[in-house]
Image (cartoon, rainbow, N blue to C red; front, side, top):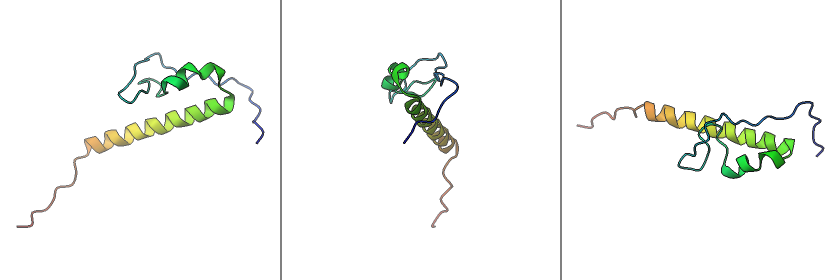
Length: 79
């Protein structure tokens, strides 16, 4: 598959927070250690894939946060 021609460089998603969570992902940009350290050597296609993974991690965090906020429905009493 041919790589699409890019006119602009893909910027780093770093937000300057640079703190790791319990799973080893940056709290600011949601990249793994390897993704952060290798960013400068990745191809544009690889960078787009990392950004896709970060987006998926963000959506998962949002979904888990909503689940934690919403208490489970009350079980009706059987008696």
